[in-house]
Length: 157
Image (cartoon, rainbow, N blue to C red; front, side, top):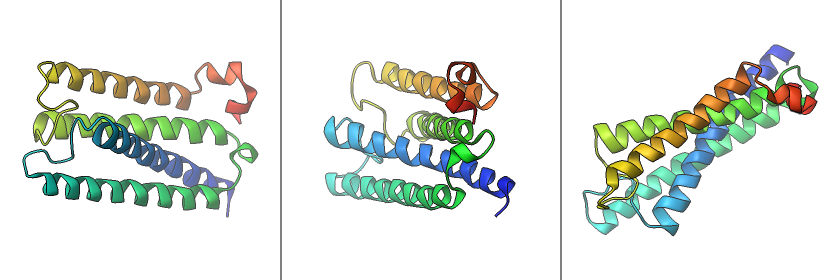
């Protein structure tokens, strides 16, 4: 496999890793621990649990596929820009997934809100979008060679 092919696997694997991690975090924290919402709130409890199960299956598949891609790409330190691609890709995947999920599920389709039924429901949704956009923006910053390479030569490789 050429270095360019490994970089592509590392890049796409990092993005998919970020998507899977963001989905897993959302599912574990907001769906299960805090029990603020389910993927689809406008149904009975069994339907909510099934919708969450489908979502969790999606995150497991994303994490498994990203693991295979990253394993095939090999050690990122051996590739020029490898670590930066991995970290920035994970941040871009996580932030991008959450921005799209927040806009589509919370605002367009209104399948659920971050804290369903709370008097400050919109504020929670907007804060979720803001944090997600910051994560995505930091991923872009690193992708474009941000100051992280100056602080750590490890990130530049």
